[in-house]
Figure 1 (cartoon, rainbow, N blue to C red):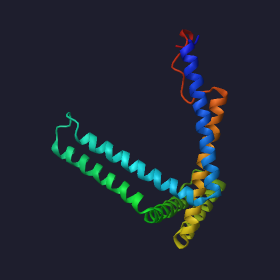
Figure 2: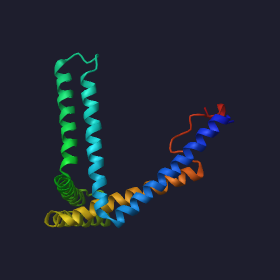
Figure 3: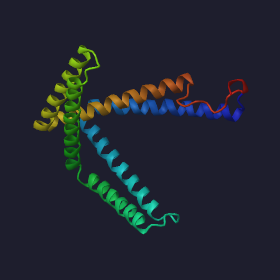
Figure 4: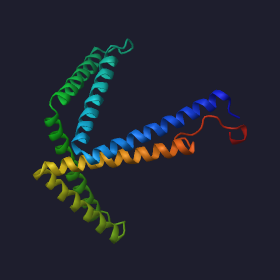
Length: 194
């Protein structure tokens, strides 16, 4: 049986999930309407991620239980580089967008080659699965070359992927908040379930 404070916390968490879901869906719609906003979000998230990783590495470098000076120095240097990169990402968003598009194209190229090789070499899967893998691989390579030749296609794909992910996260969050279901297993189990 839940206490009053547990009910208040779970109700608060449910409300928070619904609010986060609404924000994610609103961001998704704004990215669909204005793809430039999606690129700004991606650049911002990349910058924040690099900054957080950099701070973490520098902090680890100063921890007292790390005895090796080489480990300390490498953590501090890598952290400093990550922080510097986060500043570069924010200072030069066009360069960052080009880098993201290039990484997308390279990723699609490698995925396409891997799918084709898997479809050709894996004799244990069915013929139709192998044909499908090869077709997906060819499609991935084709999209990769389209992105290389026309970066605007890559920007569209990046923003579309961001919008779809935000939409899915938003819907999932609202459903979890409205239904009261948790994403994680409840820590309060009855003695009969132990």
